[in-house]
Picture 1 (cartoon, rainbow, N blue to C red):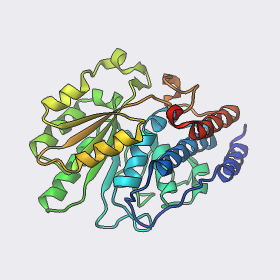
Picture 2: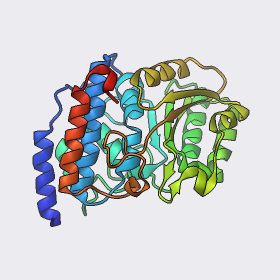
Picture 3: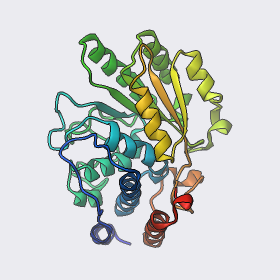
Picture 4: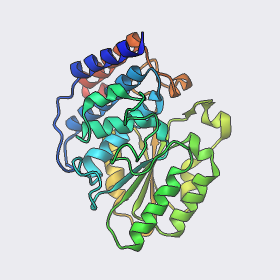
Length: 310
């Protein structure tokens, strides 16, 4: 399928799979599980469609973090889509910047940018670049993509806010693969030393990286015990359980004198059967047939009985 034809088809599918929920001028909003389920399912579809449109990208790790980031953006993060640099906002940093399809989908579905931009993902001149760039999008706090650096930036932001007695919070999303880099652990040590209780880290523990299983490439277990040894407050959750994520975020915001980490046990490629637990889908885009199958599976999961949902 030629690039132009693929983008036109993606635009058509974006219209066909438009969301049935509303956006709000200001977040967080205390919405029920039904809204969050619809929202996170839409995020999954957007990830699939944007990577299909580009013919490249990183769907696997985007899908594994969908519930965690959906819950954050809707129910806990202070932000105003029409005013990305609002002084009262909380800060979100994607240390694993390659999951930009997830970040752009979150921006689109909370009202920052038009949905049609998803079809321009990774295209020359598009603000939706392969890795988020703050020079192209006001909503991107810090350009990212070089793995292992995002938590250090988050620590710096949180320390600066705390030293000025500001109430803004900082949230960082990192992957398990990038935690094989030493800078992550230096940042973990610094965050505890400076008692950054305004910092919450999401640790997407899907056990896979581009080269295969994390424990085969460079073992990081036991993760929870390591964070505890570094004097962090730890929450271990099913990273696809909206209720558990919501509860962990609520508790993290009440902690004093220590940073918090939410360790989400997730599945890479979650929600799309042929992508789940497959390292190949770390950085590969679906073709048209695979895209249609993925969209169908996501819709079917949303309409399944409660006990059979993600």
